[in-house]
Image (cartoon, rainbow, N blue to C red; front, side, top):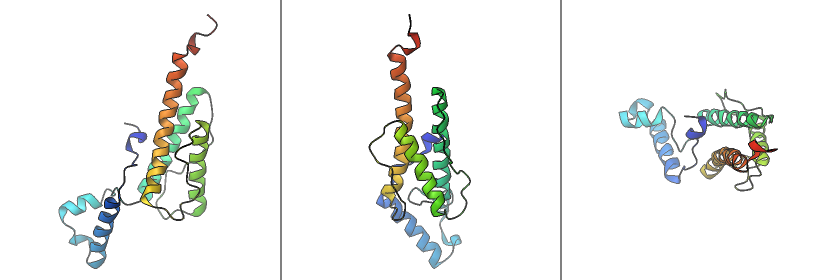
Length: 157
């Protein structure tokens, strides 16, 4: 399974509300007040939350996609960070969005568009970012299939 298979772009408002519900329970009491089910839901990272686990997954996906372009003998320069462990700086987030835009532009992905900022991030923005990475991967695969179908491997015969 590749990192592309782990991308999340189906977050819902209910997912975000569930994170808030569990966080409020922790704030009011402690993490020990969570039921075993809530704890197993909370510890690995919740779908409605957005933290360094998600940013590391995005960084890994960016690197994965840039490496896929190498099969076309094309180097796509990216600075993908994969060791997030704290609140990201604006420059780190801007670099991540620039990487995604670079990859998106290379496959002429026009929709959805890459967010220009995460200043007012919502779960829909998070979904869009990861969906774009998923769609870029599909476009790379489609281009490879179309090249083979067009007989490019047999030109000059």
